[in-house]
Amino acid sequence: MAAEKMLQAAEIYAKSPITLKLRELQTLTDIAREKNLVVVTSTTDTHELGNIIALTQERLKKSQ
Image 1 (cartoon, rainbow, N blue to C red):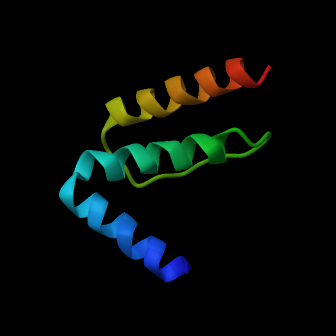
Image 2: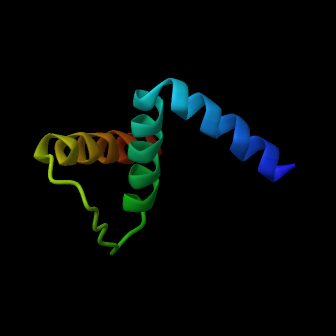
């Protein structure tokens, strides 16, 4: 059931905050792969933006 999977994920994220951050970056990378799309986030940490850009570029290389 979807609710059970979400509960399991929430428990994992609660134990390891970095896991949640990695999931967030993965989601943003997936979104950014869409052509002609702008992604707006609420982060003020420019270093995170660099990570997103790097992940996106890496995914694009792999998909070509």
